[in-house]
Length: 191
Image (cartoon, rainbow, N blue to C red):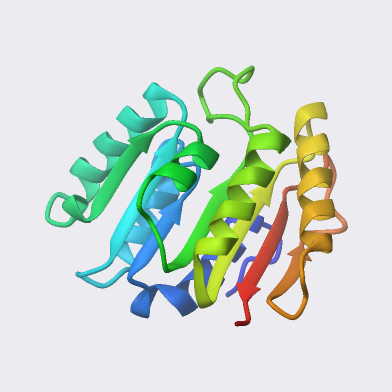
């Protein structure tokens, strides 16, 4: 059953449509590695996955999770520490089939270290330019904090402004939940 109450789990159904044939996958915010592991476990054996995070603890947590849960395949993942916008701009990654981002702060980490709208918008813009035709990008934003609210509004404003002849952009979020539930932004490159 598709989980209509949970943005993070809901996006997995979108990923599952892309991953069997995806060659290049980028997790812009690998955090504790849960999404990176999911991406790896649902990708084919020749897929290359790039996992990015600005925090050293996130990189370590992701690597530990991958080594423990996917000892035979974790070599398919290239884990990179740095800002998602800078790495996308400088690292030679192109023809991306799937880009994912789970914005906000590192769960069980320092909540004062959060993604910010300026670097997030820049990362999205660079990533979309590198997205393959029919490639998919999903972004989960968390409007429950002041910073998260600003970031989600900035992401929505940016996505609303991009060329509809090149990208389909949508949002999905529960509308009857308390406490500002996460918002899922979905972008597919048309041409």
